[in-house]
Amino acid sequence: MERQEERGAQESFGAFVEVVAALRGEHGCPWDRAQTFDSLKPCMINEMTEALAGIDLCAASGDASNLCEELGDVLLQVVLLSQIAREQGLFGIEDVIRGVARKMIRRHPHVFAADGGKPQREEIPGRWEEIKRAEKQNRTPEQERLEKEAFAAAARQVIAQLEPKAGKARFSPENAGNP
Image (tube, rainbow, N blue to C red; front, side):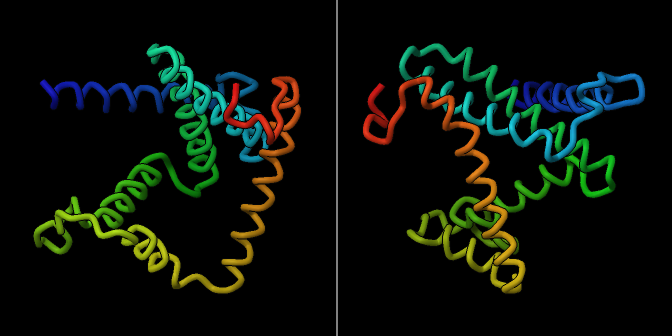
């Protein structure tokens, strides 16, 4: 039964990817066709924030329907951005999935066997960060500088977009975590 459900999920995901491609296609939706990496940044921030709220709502109410919907919206952003990348010849959703799967396998040697051996079976504290550092060790100082600048710019954008919404919700650093 589990394999059948897995196949159904794969078929549903493939169909969803086709829906997004059609939205961006020649006879697709004008709004979707007009989107770019930059124009979707506010959408990604909004959907990520709504998914975080959905987690809290699920924990508070026991109702997961909002969380399920919001995770779908986050997935839409990932697939839509990947479709734009495909159109530009950069990568496709398959590359995104393959890359994150490889990363999770690499960063979990206590679960997955390396080089045909046996999994370590015991998580080693600090190992995740050690593996992460090793993955980044071939980066040039220029690449590191650009990554830091891009992260800082993204953080500023998140703050700028969420600050007005937080103010409407009467948020302040003093009452963070206290609804």
